[in-house]
Image (cartoon, rainbow, N blue to C red; front, side, top):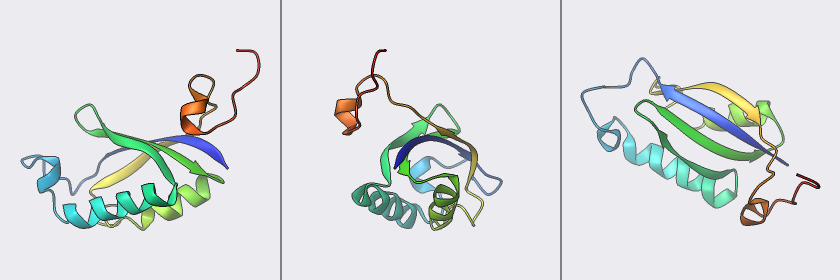
Length: 105
């Protein structure tokens, strides 16, 4: 498995007049994200700035990430869209993630 940094943004269905936890189907979205964490698929995640989210994901590759995030109903509902999936090589603090440390920083 490899780590990926995944950036998501508010989609066209995002209601800008409501806070995060009042968006449609928040409870279902939150339950899905928590299940991903329990499975070890999402390592870290949360809002980044006003309209972005950052997820650190442990996966085989981009296809797996896209398929799994499609399981979150906020994806087909148009509340969140993935804008970037980048492989992330952990060089610092790898031990906190359970990742092997990269040799010779």
